[in-house]
Length: 421
Image (cartoon, rainbow, N blue to C red):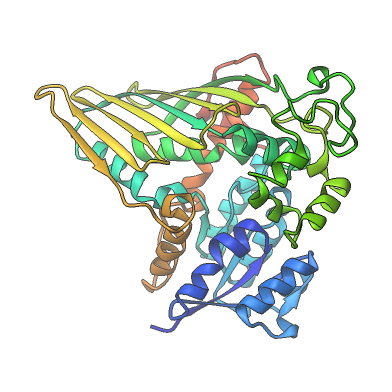
């Protein structure tokens, strides 16, 4: 079967490093034919990696889409607030679209994109990559087979890891909900989605609490300058000192703000970009911890907790059923299934995947291409219609958090939004 062709809009960490490499490893399945990326260094690197002609590289999504439909697929990985317009235009031109999560920070735009995909008869798949990992697929299969009976409750913890929190959500692109998205949407819509995926029942009610507790100016050390490299008096005591982190154990994170990983380039970037700012004196406002409570059709409940103050970056889950229990750790790829009757425990240790997100980054591309090759327009595993409900869960959770934890009925919430579109 002939390889599918794709354009990439947004050649950052997700577009250029998570999804597009699938084409380099599997050229018989996918070829990248054009890129739109405002950062010249990233654009040039992508052009080199995928051997693109100059006339197929662009600084803006408007320019590449002005050519009309030049490929089968549009992979859209711009920043959150720049998802809507290129997605709507690509669907109108006849592209099948793979869109990085979240769909949009605006719930009305999410609804419009889902409707547009149906109107134009195109596939719009959202990158909820956890659905495509062996870890979560195994847990879903165990539940679906009735091995642990009926699910009574789920507890999911997202351990963000403290330095990841400081890098991405205090200093980085997703630190400010006005310029990006609320934490529950940007980071944890994965979690709303995966709970929705494994329980396979409709979430009916939701409530949430959380706040920005630590990373704010009132907690800055005495005498701390605006930038860590400007002579911070607690440089050896603060775990978040930018110089020690990015020139040491966190050097691999520096690739997000400098193309050249030399000491000189990292230091220059720390003097000029937000990544060199004191974590207590940034313009961040997303929460550093949040809990969400959910009730599903049939009475099952779920509790989700996101916290930036953890030593590991992973997800821990406990699924409590009427006949048994599942416990799992995503980073370890370890799942335990316990039977109440026999008291037997079955241990599943899954192989580690070289692909990011536990194999989900490659998995979603592989599944997306397979669906398109079926010759009809399928309802993909993470279609816009499916993902819309997960997004609404996140939006409702944030609305509840901002309203003192008020319980929100999801049907009522969606009905109110629909009246505005």
